[in-house]
Length: 447
Image (cartoon, rainbow, N blue to C red; front, side, top):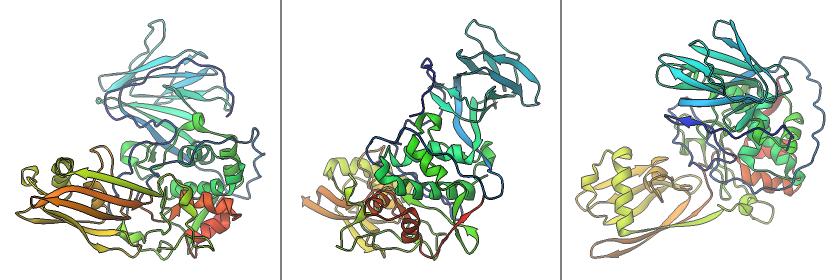
């Protein structure tokens, strides 16, 4: 990891959702976005930690163009947070008027006041109320610490009367260095080609989706809603090596950026794009068999390659009372008993495409991504994937026990992260890995 000065740990107190994620995201994959606005969910499990090289190689010279910046939403609706830095911080308001700078190694609180914000120093000094602030370290090599995480680039703070929003404005390449290890885990040099492939995928996703959340004042979230981003705190030398080894490179189809879907573990076969997203009928999002010459799945090394979930009759009813109102409109009161649960159709990739649930007085059908949202192991966790078979035990005319034996984690469309690790270990370079998952696409360098 990159060394930095020791800083105190400061607690972020939030009044709403905090989007800062710690290392690998533990939250389940988000529901698919509306047609035409697909999100690329992060996988549900990351490869385990491993040693990394100590010094990243120098960055290659760009061949043309300028590296773009991207704005990442770190915190939305917070009640307060703290900012500190290794170096002194330059501060302006939203009009560009200078505010007294923050000295190095001191943590300042940012607190909403009315429809604006104020800065509060450790000694109690308070700034005038402003609609927002822009903060940057006086040395571009230094970082800003928001709460307990450090970030390159600038931090923009905005108040709207409902809390504060923190945004990181940063170059795309630095953004990617904070994404790779959060998405792929801390790898060793054996997996460099998989990391390079992820760098191209994540860069493509970021540039394709710039402005996606402009109504919130930024481009992308730092969470699994888009790509997990941990800032400089999650950077590793290997992540920087992967980013610099693919500087500016993206995947294109007929000259345009592709929809760069990825997930953790495909289970040996990727999903067709339209199995998950109605608008993802793309020639490069076809289901492929992701196995080696011996017929073994490249992602078999994943801890989520095979899994099992079980429900008792009571726990199944409890879960369905929570989930069916949202996915089918059935009221919770109608889930008094569950007579039968069965998969009635399968997709091209042999995932469950339609599940019918017999409630005695009616049969309800759940299709596509709603299956994972309905058959939850717990209220907080979606089912790992839709690649499963069901076995039920019935007693007294209703389900007494339901078992799902499954494969894979995530939606399975496009790039399989654990499959990429398996392919890298089999000797494939990142170009071959990308061609395997996105048939017919081109790697193009934009800057």
